[in-house]
Image (cartoon, rainbow, N blue to C red; front, side, top):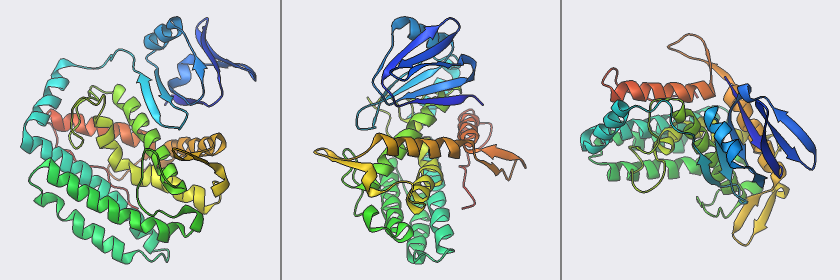
Length: 330
């Protein structure tokens, strides 16, 4: 599988013959074009139309993040796999409330069961989270009782709120207290890590959708409206606990990120560049980590799991096979 390139330094991206180069005050670095799937840009980077034309030709997506580390937007080359048939199937399953609820409930169920397995994992390692595990399980049983997506979003919110109560017990570090979920801007260090990690995952899933016949603008759990993309938000829910949250527990548990790795801005708490790079390194490492897939009977990377999830959704939309969300063994 092709690599993701992450750019943190300021500089210029240029086409150089039949490849590309990044020029900065550190010098010029040639990036082999055939090895790249997408580029995540965190620094202040200049580029021109010729470069974008080349990215479009090579079907490479550029994802831009702002000063605060938040996703700003993507250069999304013309969709080469989009099909009118699949867009119609996505719309059909969205417009039919029962079909939409069925798919949305699967996303919530997959997310909830992965949260539950994370909590159970730490319960088995002496963390005082048994009561939280019981509450998540009880709330998960209510998913099938939801009569519309509004009720479903309410249950999803309750499950996530209960799940986040386990963080302080799992992390056990006074510098990283959860308190409550705050987003833009995050009000404490742990929330800053969660926001950054979620933003990375949303963006990654968007890039994987590009490689399928699906249209990222039509989601099911998150309402399809004037927001640019929603399907990536839906699918990311399943993988947040087993990718983003596990990375956070590792970074804090191994003291790879400390309180000193953050800046207190008037807007909130921000990761310093060094901490963002550390997170990205772990994120990239997690994506290529493999697990034994129960059905396939072979090793599959986490990044591949996301693509497989999208393929399963395609089959569901076409009426070939009922969608079943991926659930980790822990």
